[in-house]
Amino acid sequence: MTDGGAMFRLALRSIRYRAGSFLASLLTLTLGAVILMTFAALLDTSAAADAQTATTLTIMASVVGGWGLVIVTFAAASTLTLQVRQRSTEMALLRTVGATPAQIRRLVLIESVTLALIAVLIALVPSRLTSGVLVELLKDAHQVPADLPAAFGPIAVSVGLGVTLASAVLAALLAARRAATTRQPGRGRARLIAGVAVLVAGISSGATVMVAFDGTEPAVMAVSGQGAILCAIGLALLSPPIITAIATLLTPLRGVSGYLTAVNLRGHTHQMATALAPIILFTGLATGTLYMQRIENESGTPMPAHMAPTIETLNYVVVGMVTLFAAVMLINTVIAATLHRRREFGQLRLAGSTRPQVLGMVSTEASVLACTGVLFGTLAATATVIPYSVVKTGSLLPDTTITTYLAVILTAAALTLITTVASARRATGQPAIDTVRVS
Image (cartoon, rainbow, N blue to C red; front, side, top):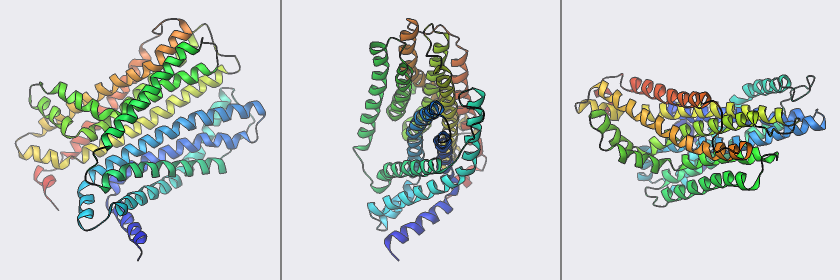
């Protein structure tokens, strides 16, 4: 049997053996494929539309689909990297028995491509339904003619398949770098550089809005919206040093839960950073986009009449897409990271910690993650909210209700706390000796 055939069989066995572990990545890729195909289907629908409607559908598909690609790729990379990190013992064993770095990279790549193909197949049916629902919503908003039929054709399928595969391959290559070698001194530096570069790009978008626009140009909203998106992604990439800094600040805490929280944040930096990233994305993108639209609605310099409804619909669709995707990513990541710590929880209990103390430690960790994610997500949102408020109203902060912001941060905190505590209760439900026993 060829080397490629052996790696393929090993990849299939790994997926079957670790079905629960691969489920988080599969759900992320499936939801990403649904989002991408839902909006790509607008291009299929535009084929039977008039010129103005076709332009509206093309803009919506391009803008939402383009940022969807960025977010899906980032999410896939995060979940796959976490999954590979949790299999460090298995990867070390493969290296010990003679597997080369190229073979391990091929194994991770085959696993990821297989998951991507399965995800696209699963996503076909729901994507067809959601694309129809989206067209009906656009009809209700009078963005497309009432008699325009929704179409789901080759463009949607090809975009969903191509982009999902590309995201999975890119994520696999990034994750496989860790799996293939035991030492990677430049990996953290590369992520730091990438995070700073993306963050600077987001800040630059906000600065451009304030110095180059007067608030009447149609492009001002598109450029301003990029600020929160880029800053949120940049801060998500910088989440490992953020976690390290937070752990340092929490070191003086008293009590068992506080001490264990600081120690675990420092000892599980990358796992905590993976859970922090979707909280930042959720908070930053939802807050930035919602407040940008509220400022637009309440400002005295509205968009052109024929564009305003389309842009408003687009913004709310983006918020819905990001909210759902970030929520699923957050839940998947937290569950995978918490359940993977069963053995650690069992060791703590055997060393003398009680189950309530362990759950208290996890609750404190979740609270710290939620507060940190909300804080940095809010900072990311300011790259959109402040510049847009300045050019539209002349005020540094928008004169609008705080209810929207409270709803966003409470949702982010609730998702983090409920998912983490529920996973920890499940992980500590067995006798401690059973969780540390080596099979």
